[in-house]
Length: 294
Image 1 (cartoon, rainbow, N blue to C red):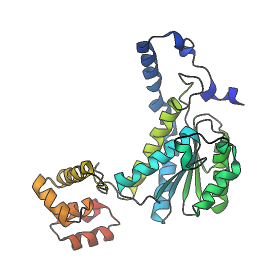
Image 2: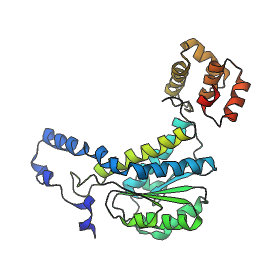
Image 3: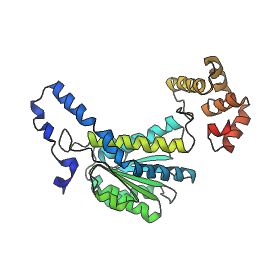
């Protein structure tokens, strides 16, 4: 029942929220938000299991698939789409599914999250395989759409994980890996876009970033597979080359073009004093890890 969920409890500190002035509202929200990161710490070992599962999926040609409803679904979609420019992966490699489809990202779709069958259908529509990992996200921990997806994923043989913001969450019983983070009652009762949403966003940041580190998308702390799709990212790409090789802006710009705007190739060219073709071969031989080529 909803009244038993920590995400639905009333926050004793905000019982008179409507009587506070703006500064007081902001101060208490800031205080409550500061608790979120700390609430994630106990779950780090389980989050690490999701990361390892994701790396294994990527290495076997599989995908990371997030699925959720409402805010949880939107956060999954957000993390998925950001992986393309940040890590230069194809859009099919990290997928965000939201109950009700793309329309639900900007407008609630009545009853979509209550359908177990819809969760299964959405995974069938993208041809889920045993090489994929499916991460179900639900602040309440009880969303039928997510449960349906996780059950179908397990039947296919895919690795499954559940992320919720309540203890003993229902979705945990339907997944191989269970992450239960409890940031506490919301400032605005039941509004899980607040602390619960922040907790989920932080966890998804960890999963995608750490997994991409694990498959060679990072050198040092530089996003060396960044996809330069606009002027800002073009300049960032050149700065990354400069940081990685300690070359000048002019040298970085020159080699960047010689490498067909592929940052990782440009870095290897400069660090190993080799041609574009040789750099590409070195990267293939090292499975895309820059450090292994130098």
